Image (cartoon, rainbow, N blue to C red; front, top):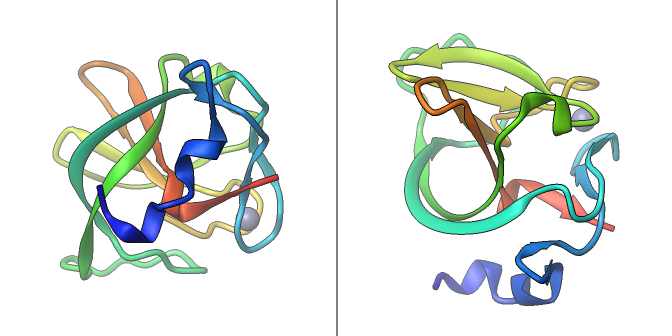
Length: 120
Ligand SMILES: [Zn+2]
């Protein structure tokens, strides 16, 4: 487990998010408590930006802790940025900061990176 997410365990209650999941930049609520399931796997996610970027090859980092959501209607607030392959990147619907995670088109699952949001 990466050190940068060392406090994440307190955010998990019975496998779900214990608190609200909010945008780091504008505090818009993305998910309400107990609506997303914790999951861990490795994924290369482009670095977060506060405005939409049309770069073809943005720098990315390996992210491994996610909230998974099986139904887009579970989100209080979420936007899409660009589509790459089978993935659509998720952004904050209010300030367009992102990607905060991604949507997997074939499985219809959405994954929000714990490191890209705040919990409160
Ligand atoms: Zn925002």
